[in-house]
Length: 190
Image (cartoon, one colour):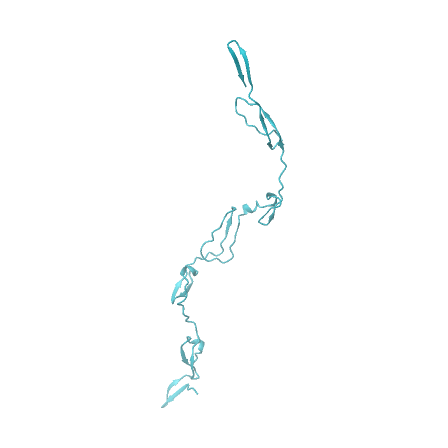
């Protein structure tokens, strides 16, 4: 039986009766004697071996501390909180900034571009971003042919009133007339 108190000549040499340590209070691999006088091995891992830790300051949140390879380091990672961004072109991309994100941020299509993604703007039978198109084209009023006579000055040829576009423009030949005169031939152009 273990001895937890030793008195010699009226003097207390060892007294373990008021010892309060338990195995979880003492580092793993170290020994102590409890209040029952029994030698006990500690089980605490509070002083863990950090020699295999490999985090860098940039990987730990700014202002927070940690132990890496037996050294206390202070984090340098930026806290970006809720990051938001928009994309406004077909090939648009959003670059997520380096650092910590709290998970509540969102990246979306800009509201201006979202307003354009409606059924009437998308060809019937085509779905874009979950929106089924209904556009089947529109009726166009075509002026089949327009005859134009060249003039000495430039002309802009446009559809007649009530037409959307011209299918064909026929430009007449430039008038050319020859007539005899006293000394030869008179040529009249136009």
